[in-house]
Length: 269
Image: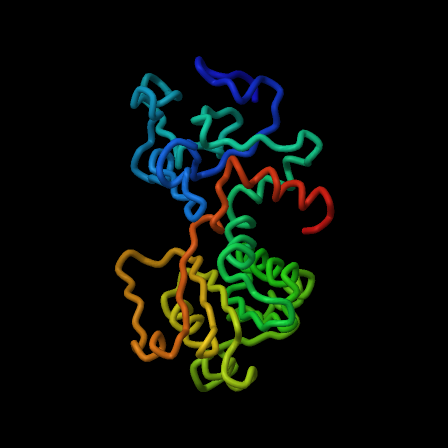
C-alpha cells in the first residue's frame, strides 16, 4: 500500500495486500452470512469500470478516462482499489508467489475443501488440470482423498498434476464412451466427489453424472458460455446425487485470504 484514501482505517502505507476481483464490504447480508461470500456491494461486475464512491475512474490518458477492470486494474504498475477489494496479508509472504491466491488457487482449492468436502480415503475426480484444477486436486490431497482422478484432454498435463496429488488419469479422447461411464467403471459406480474446472458445459454434465448415487457431490467451478444450458436427466437428482456451484471457492476475501497465505507460509500447500 502506497497511500490510503479518506476514511480508510484498516490499512496504512507499507501494508502488504492482495487485490481480489471480488470484494467484502462486511456490512451487507451476504457478508454477514456464514454461508455466502457474494458481497452485494463488491461482487464481480465486468461493466462497472469506475470507483463506487463517485462513479469516476482514477486513471486517464490524453484527457480520456481509463476504466477499471474488475475493480482492481492489476495489469498496471500502480492501481487504486476499493478497500473492500484488498486483503491484508503477512508481509513476509513473497508477493510474486502468493498473488495467484487472489483468483485461481483459492477458487480451486476452496471448491474442494469448502464445498465438495471430500472425506479421508474418498475418491475425487478433477475435470481440467489447469491452475484451478491443480488447486482443486491439492484440496483433495490435503483432505486425505485416496483416489484423485485427473480428467483432461491434454496428456502433457498429467505428469505435473502428480505433484498436486493426482494419482490416476483419464483422457476422454482415449475412450469411445462418455467419460462419466469410464469413471463409473473405474470406481464401482462413481466417485464420491467431483470438481469441474474447465467452463465446458459438457465437462460439467460429465462431472455431475460421474459421482456415485446416494452420496456423490459434484461442484461446478468453470464459467460457461452465456448461451450454454446444463442438461441431465432428473433421475440423477432423484437418486441422491448433489450438484453445487461455487464462486471464489466460497472464501470471503478479506476474512479468509490471509489464512490461506499462512497455509502456504507453513508449507501446508
